[in-house]
Image (cartoon, rainbow over all chains, first blue to last red; front, side):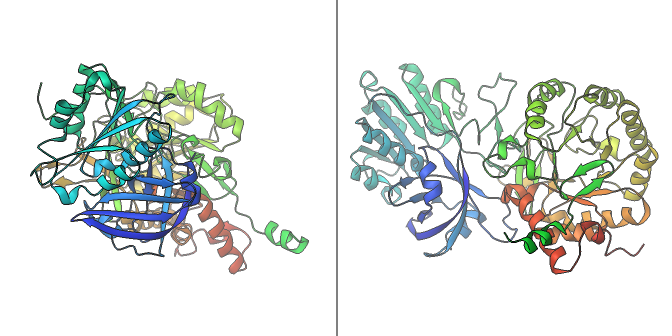
Length: 266
Length: 314
């Protein structure tokens, strides 16, 4: 179930060089949101840029009817989004996509997020913690200033381990190196990941190697975002003849059932 | 609602007879932009739409093109989906019964690689209730065989329309390609083949290049340009055809709001089709029908047909 809504923007703040956090009041869409779903956000009331932009739901407050987005400025559309001010309205469509699968029982979950890919994992962590799961978040970024979500995870009771490429905070190196160094497979029930595909490929390899179930959230350019235009097609496995649609069949896919681009490493 | 008001409502006629395709209002959703209607069920009731032109269908299932399949361009987008569809049997057995049960006005869109494919498709659809008409995709720029080359040669256009008419009792409406020098010659050929209406325009052939990779953006290299960027081209072609060919036209190309739609009607379209605009506003079909009705009311007109070709000097 999804709907169109004119959201009222509460804040739209720059968190790091190209990372922004936008909070809005959108009670209808908020009441429908599941972790891992996304919104189609209209960037311009004129026709250029034309298409809506798919942006993951970062956090939801059902009581207040608010949704928070964490987005990265990557082009004209998201650049325009940074100019939206408090008290202005935002045309949103959602929630869309399948979202993460939530376990029926409390679990020991490991969440691996890279860069802005951390976004869909926050509301997931909130929901997992609410059902008494243990949540360990491995959070990678270029440097400490880009670790804009760390505090939010800590605030809701998740254990956060960070990795930065320049070593300005936490482990120096890749978040996937942190994963293999710090996470005990025998104490992990499931893994959720979102970030650069090459990072998720390493997480998938870890999950498959240790037979841990898990899910990843993919990104793709989209037009309709409801499964009608067939624009966001991809093959789960290179030998497949059928294309899945990231918007409708995803954006969340099982780590066990997908070949992710791993940078050419065999 | 008081009685005066309801009488006022009743005095406006938005229904259209598009060459035998009966539409409750002049807004159709274009093939390939609305799936089979179910995809948009959260946002709009397909029964309220003038006609749902379903995804292009072929005899056999097609996997579609290699991604990337879409990319945004200034005030538009390129697509090269490659006619991904489950094949005509799945359409007839799974989708059509559900659409029929709902009472959706369905126009089937058929495509093929050869004259025989089109004829066979038309024959396969024959006798199934719930199809209001057939749109012939003779203009898809994204498939290696068929599609575009059928739509750019007047003899081919005439032959394919005639072949389909011979197999079908339904109204037949070829979708014309804008990728031609003389659109009027193509439209006349369609008429000579027995077309009941014309659908125009399909997308304009285009491409985009990624300067970082130094490669074409689309997996198919070329794609079809749609959206507001092509609106002036579409209007011009409809105007030209309306002046010289006496067939009802389903006109579209970059329609984003009721004003755009009215421009198409005034250029000679009897009804309009929307596509890319749906991605921006999933309720666009309803918004346009309401906007047209308001325009008629504001201008003391009773029937949308009074505006058809209003801007054309015949």
